[in-house]
Image 1 (tube, one colour):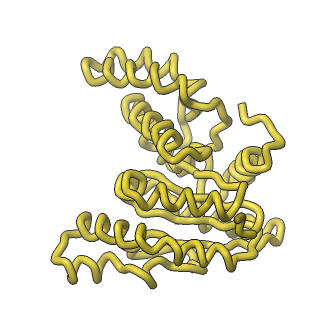
Image 2 (cartoon, rainbow, N blue to C red):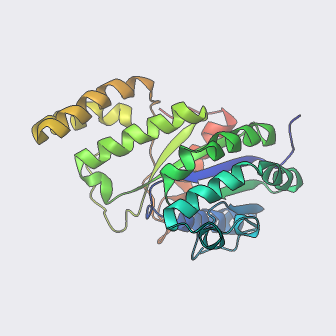
Length: 257
């Protein structure tokens, strides 16, 4: 059974500090003020200290990492892992939430420690719920513009992006955020377009660079060519380009290459 939850469901993932929550705030504001869309915002970070938007559903009402840390005697990372495992066994609650939503867009925020979310059962179970919730679901992989100015860091992030798509079995769109802080970027952010330039640069960085170059030359075979918007959640720069890419992908009516 397919649950009717509106037009598009978007999950935001990415490394800590990439600006996922800020981008959700900026994108939701743009959707609401520019077109009058109804946007439903979900926070799935049980350890969040501050969220720039007001969640319509907050996972901390189910599991709070700070309380989990006290109850189980765990440190911050251990408490987040435990919280993700607890939530993975309560996905029927998330499914029930989606069942009730009638908004045009559903934006889902995820923990800053991306690996704890992606490589636990929670990510796979969430994707299963999304498949029931909407045929128009996509993952936004948010990348910090300052990080990818270094070729070795870009290669590592690119490998992660393709790996996430392979693991989750859902379309993953990379988005470069914070261009207001790092305006000069010599790469597009698209693995398929960048692979030759980046792989050549990596070879000059010693053994680590050669290893990344080899992996990059392999994983690009599994990547999809796509335009990669360079946006700023702070200044709202190019938010419309982010929306255009999401729309083209989810409606299957455009060419992203």
